[in-house]
Figure 1 (cartoon, rainbow, N blue to C red):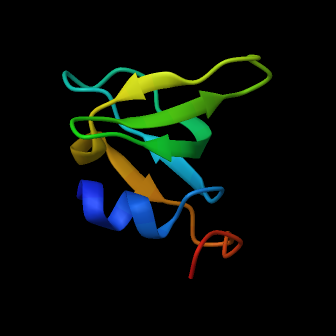
Figure 2: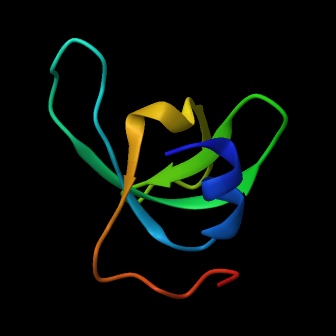
Length: 66
């Protein structure tokens, strides 16, 4: 995913695929900055800066800005 694609999918679900092959993690894009997408993972109360290139859109989500 690119940052532009992430901007189009704020509030949509994504899967984070960490570099190096660690376990994937589901989250929701909460905002997008100049360098990172901000994603809230699981039940965490805050978002984490995440490189958009490691995100893929969850197939069942369609609630963002599209």
